Image (cartoon, rainbow, N blue to C red; front, side):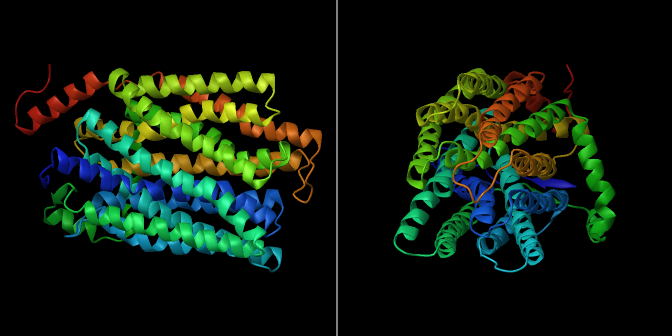
Length: 477
């Protein structure tokens, strides 16, 4: 089996490549934030589905992405086509993502069972489309940026676009939908118009990313036996897929990152999905004021981006993420004890929590990229797609658990979506969902990450060993 690596651009051309790749971050964060933040609100507030059923709908739909990830990750590593092995999926998702997102925000007035079937089906189609984009797109980054600091730079540039995507997904809906409703438009029509708008922008962004990353993929020319193997039915690849994940989990670096991702995603899902409920029902803020909370989060992310990049380059990726999550987790616990009962205190909490979650999102993918070299050294394979698929699967499962937990906790606390003023027990539960549990999750994730073994020095030694081995020279010291 032979490999060919396209020529790597340098200087200005490399910056342009990193920039155009980063545009895909509009979809990576924008769509994820929009549907995880507002779908529960839409289902309970517009469609009038009870919170426990709405939580079940969203969690079941997102679970199907996990099943899809098994296949997409394997295909993304195995596809042999003249147009590439990852970019064809990105091209397809540029059209699938907008259509499936819009379908999730259509108001269906029917029996509860018809509503459940429709929203589970449409949600499943969206998350399948998202996995078709997210896994190949993220894995492609490991082939675009090959060195330790280059990957940090790439993900930092991408972070700029994920912040823009988050702004479109979290701040703009509240302002635009509120404006349209005040102008006399029905709630469901306002939601639909904005969903079409954000879907169009994201689709354009994904297409630009696909177009300008041509020629960046690692080209693998398989032998005849490999070609014959690829002709087998997908079901016969199941053992190979499971073997990929087993071998990856045997790598200490991968196992630790996966554990960290599981805990982080559970807390992050509670934070993002619980924020709107907390602002609306615990603090009784209107849509315009709530939008300022999201705006503060966006501004904080912008401010923290260069700080995170500098810390990661100078102190290392592990130091950055563990340090930032510790600061956010401890601060959140202190504020929970003091009491997040006012708008100003909630802003302070959002700013502090943003530091930890921004650090994770900005740098964690670069850490997963580095596992590809560990995998190549230990197992003689490069499986960026499988690596990204695996971390996406566990993240999806953890997010689904978080969404289900919100529905269950709200029901246990007596939440009633028809009431503007909730009971004291419900308000206390909203505080726990939005502040306490996410802060505890960050601290647990930090403890998990402390055992991560791959530093910049070890990574560079690993790359040197791989280079020597490829030349047939002695690479063991």
